[in-house]
Amino acid sequence: MTLFKRILAALLCAAVALPMIACGNTETAETAADTDTAAALEETEPAYTLPEGNWDGYNFHILVHGNSESGWDKNDFHAEELTGELMNDAVFERNAAVEELYNVDITDEKLTGNIDGNSMGPGYQAISTAVLAGDAAYGAATVGGYDACTLVLGDFLSEMSSMPHIDLSQHWWDQNAVEDMKIAGMTYFTTGAVSTAINDCTIAVFFNQQVATDFGITDLYSSVQEGSWTFEKMWEYAKLVAADTDGDGKMTTNDRFGSITWDDTVMAAVNSTGVKCATLNSEGLLELTLYTEAVVDALDKYTDFAFDKNVSYNYQRDSYDIATPVSMFQNGQSLYYLQLLNLASSFRDMEADFGILPYPKYDASQNEYYSTVGSWHSMFFCVPGVMDNAERSGMIIEALAYYSEEIVTPVYYDQVLNYKYMRDEESIAMLDIILSSRVFDLGWFYKVGNYFAEVIYMIYEYTDNFTSRYEKAEQMALGQVEEINAKFLENKK
Image 1 (spheres, rainbow, N blue to C red):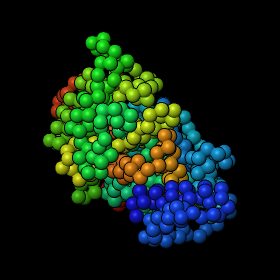
Image 2: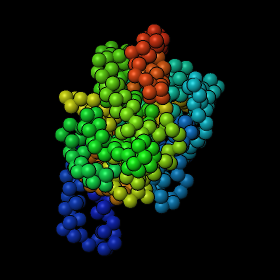
Image 3: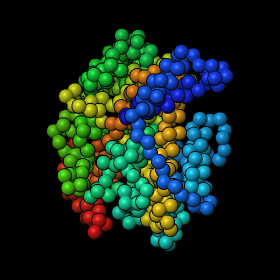
Image 4: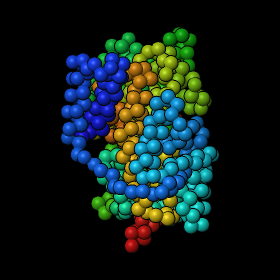
């Protein structure tokens, strides 16, 4: 069953529950139909039973650290009590379900501070220090993507797929992440329902529904479903909307743009082709794959779009203050806003409705959309390299992931989609496409050739010189790929 069907069933059941409670179990024809729909969606889901265990009040302690700047250090495990806030209460109930099942306590520890240029932030320091001391202080962790990669190369993480009771083939683990990141068949960090942080840092396209309506743009959702949502279509509509509305002869934050962008969306342009900076080959080893005809062409199309200051407003080239572009989008001064899903929380008070679309295809002939995970913002779930009981850790981790999908994921969907009370099937389907089409590019996470920075620098400088940037870093990148593969092959022995 697709994630869309599971979430729709959960939301329908939630919708049914409220009127039934209010009316004292009085079931109308409408709620009965909704219940039947939810049951039909769920009927093909095979039963799954978590293993039994009793761990005598063991404290399973989870470390949390991401880049603290701009709040990219989301803690998916902290909820001391029920407060009425939906996500907090879902996390509390998830934790309580695991605690009751295995007689354990789930606790967390959140560190602050950014990950520096060497990818050795507080998360790396805490885990590496504990492992070197032989201290099983942390049962699990979520850490920034750059730190996670550095921890792997330092032999500070456990290989998750070989842990007892953890089944990474289950749908509560993100299968794109599992497939994209298991070098030589081994997985040292991943994601899934257990953490919503990675959802928040997925690049998507927001659109102002009122602006779209005003300009007769009515096919955005349908073009996504039909597979025709491309760079060209996005660009066509952006040009239609952009205008010097105050008539002063120049485009400023007082005018209306086709799109608001930011630097990191250029990484999404690369991945929109289906190509990664580094890809797993037929032997399961990493291979440098960044320089292709499709990537060069996609970057040409993207820079044509992003460098046209009459149509696109890159707020980071003016200021890193996100308040101005958010206000512009809310006020109808842009059709699109290319950003991370986390930005949805900024639109609570927006009078006009907004919609969410996946990042467009590079070419309509592609079978799929590809949604990039922002590498600087990413947080991945991992297990430190020292455990005092692998069976216990595996049980608790799998239960956390299982109950996260049952309890937390529906609330996350509900929260993201309901800032403007969107609960229609179209909006749920869009979010499902975005999250199910995610690209986990190890080339970005391992900073291979520093290419993630090189393509961003193109946007900093408004220069279209990808070929020279690629060639300058190619030998360094090839050396890094060789080193990464050697480490995984050594660990596999």
